[in-house]
Image (cartoon, rainbow, N blue to C red; front, side):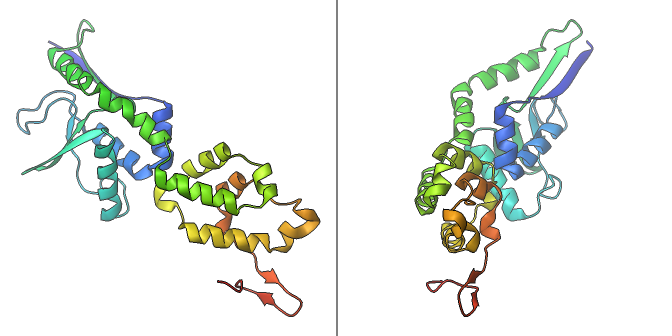
Length: 236
């Protein structure tokens, strides 16, 4: 019987959050979905929704370390399961919030294999419900970091922002690009002593979420004194 099959990408908040916050995990998930079987294969033994994932270069990831981190994130958050075999690592798509597979016969009815795959996915529903919550939530460590950033920000910077705005700005930066807390605090201190922030009683101090979004910890101003321009604060 003639069958039709396709892979669907869902334009969802879950997909957007994964791509923006964990780009390497998103790349790897794309690779798995692209390679996933739409029908069972007797030669490889792969079932619907399974794929040999290949190495980090095939997924477009820059290093083995980032590749391992991406695999760990996808498995920890129930996007996929991974199993080492003699042929290589086999991934099975578990969460259909980003990608889903569909295999139907000539009448448009899901095939027996598709129904079996759907039933298997349904048994994981309690796990996959946690995925979006995990992506959109702030970890305890990030929460502590954001509290420290908020407290270190001048009053004007807090008045022109909010904790929610700060949290959103932080989430938009991929995990691997989050700077150490001490670097952010030191940068804030440097900015607080800058001519720009001291001018007109802090008129030009931006909301802290904008400061984070624009990565201003990477653009630290020099501090002018009567005798010289300091490149470091006394306590640095």
